[in-house]
Length: 207
Image (cartoon, rainbow, N blue to C red; front, side):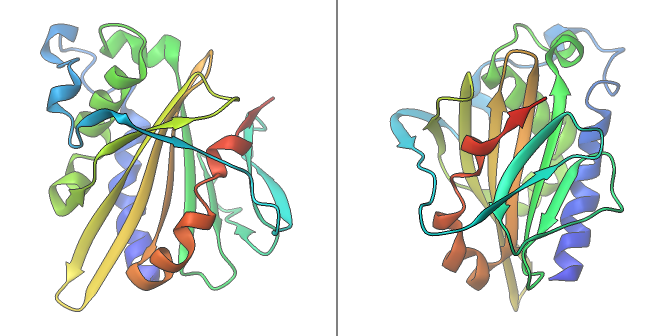
């Protein structure tokens, strides 16, 4: 799992440059239609998230204090990284990553400030290598009270002939920021635990 975590992190690291990469390109070069996103958005797919009632949760806050999410209290935060929030489950087989993007900055790369345009930008500028390796499920709209909008899909990556890993990606919007939230791990651990972790966007708080 450590090998995949390193791979996923290295593929995600490009997202830090979203606000910089492509600044010299006119915004018209970026497609704003969701028809070209990796996963097609189906409005009929609406999922209502609910907080768990049988798990003790702990709040994990990014080093700069801007935002936090809640995860089971047995999870452990990666304190070495200060650029985004990374938290591992106790076994090290699942990893949650959260990163944020000021709307005022990334909107310069988009036509409009909507979440669909951000997803398109994120896929094109942030995770093209990851998407080239992955199979994506349909994009589902999430129903939450704390976010303006949230959408999610699942990515499946065949690392080699003996190893398959999966990741659940959530794209979210608040008044001032876009967020990317991912939960990833080896296929068996991921499949066993993901349904119980999909609540995470509900716990996103800004300070």
